[in-house]
Length: 472
Image (cartoon, rainbow, N blue to C red; front, side):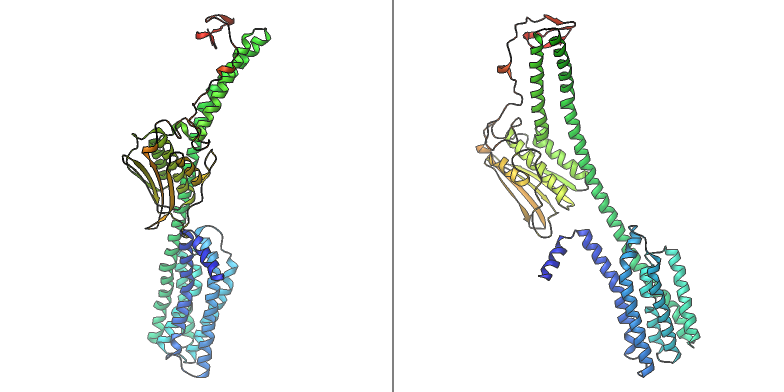
């Protein structure tokens, strides 16, 4: 059960999290590898098999392993310091520095008793600073790290010289110790730099997605303003006029209120149209909108195939909804880099496919997105809309690691003007008859017996046809 839980948690991680975890794991393994390779190899031939040299060598190996533990413990803090997420506490370097001094002392003692040959001594010299510099290289700038590496080399060289190491062995200590520090510099720091760049790119992609959503909200706000602004202004003027007429005892006040009622109902219908997306409910508009939104979010979106201009309005409307919901799912719940939208139409059938390479690692479909209005939500709502046209919807992972959504509508069973037309109530039941976009309550309006052009107030007269008032 624990293995299954770990595997599931690993699969649920994002790509960036897995790359970051792999990078940290690799850096954590470096000191252990060098400790076992460079500190353990001399035990085979280079260290004299006598009690004192073996004891000093074993103590030095244990100190190196303790350094590895501290290096792994400090790696997260140093990594966060390099990425700018947190500040590395300086007190955490106290124990590694003390262990380094102990390691240098044990190495000098081992060389002083002539317990190790020159090649083994140089390998131990390579390993001595590794655990500390792996942490230090992510905390300080490169110039300061190089200066500290020179000081550390001077410390090792001085300690071994004081222990009696001379000649070529002492001369080899300098390049060996510098090589270990430079090796850490060119391996650990570029890895951390690459991760910082990738995280910044991921954050930029998230910002782009949020900007795309914000742009869509602004567009929706503009549509609402265009729909309600003028009508509310007219309602306010007509209601004020009705109040004036009512205060003067004029019967035309009722006609003005009927006009206010008509405009209010028309505005209500227009608001429904905006919310349901039927102001721009054609396939070409939705394809262009999806391509623009996905491209703004950093996703390469390609639209191919038939333009769909010759399709019946109900089919265009239904496929437009499929494109909108699919683009929303890709933007909010996937992690794709590319998206392909393909429209194919024959004499009998039209097929719309949306593919993206952001299928989840577990192979499940992205969570459905709630529709703006209507009885269903997400994929379930799309199936209801397509069912009204005898269509079908399939969604799921496909070969090649892509997530594919396929909508199919038979054209032979779609008579013009039926199903979900442009003016249809998107939130109605499937198969419900199409309703007109605006319904005027003429049957409820009280009869008005005013001739056209009659003055009912200063500067206001009856409009043409005998209904409504206009300013003179």
